[in-house]
Length: 330
View 1 (tube, rainbow, N blue to C red):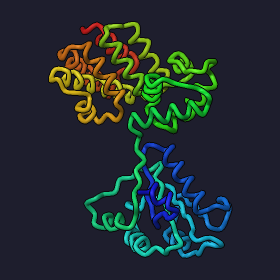
View 2: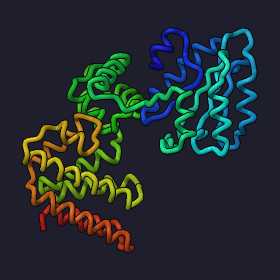
View 3: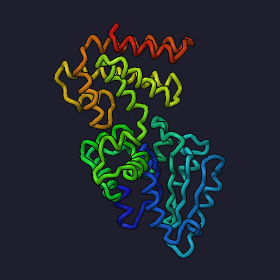
View 4: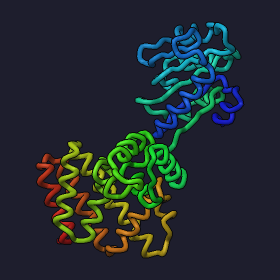
């Protein structure tokens, strides 16, 4: 475990950092820098490289350079895919025999961490690295973190409102950190309210798509069209908006099937690959307002609309027509 090694003051020789939760990744990287480079990042014992244009010779030279007035050298390599490099065997040989004075970290930020497990050389490389996946936190941990950060700002927030804030921001700490500070600064009271959150927090695309789904199921055409306009205001590509709407409608169908078969929200989360409990709760609540036939028809309407968008149909007009049709069940 990385955190255990960090606390002991003895991190391993090689790590791969990747994952959606950039806040935790950056925090752990910062702690590693503090441990190995107590004199700061301007010193001789800290080396940072960007993957584009980086050569194997440069990596080898960095590894062979002894630290000065310190036990170890920290080498950060950002966005260098060791699994797709033409010199994978050389990289594997280097990592298999790293000196004790080195800690090398490969950070995957703008490129995807996706080693092909079918290739023997990739399996060999993985034997010599510790992979740390920074995943989105579970709901209970995330809510506690939100409350603690509001407390640091001199504010309180209820569990329900903390869950709501996590929901509309997508649950990523990197986004939440800024939104917490913004909301705390805006609120004039000791306790944060839902009204405070709605006043200053910008919801993510998925959250607005959830709101649209609920409006459609409630047959509230005006609210559905207002929510669709929110999606348009996000300036996302029409096909991305259509994908998000279609995904939520498909998830709604699965939620309705779960309701019909008396399955709990954990089953829904597993079937739809939903990370957060509060997202599943939202879908189940909405699904209880709909019929199975409505949900099935909605999926078919979305599919036909997506097909028409691929044929060059005016996207905004077609999506407005889709939302109106779904709201009225015609």
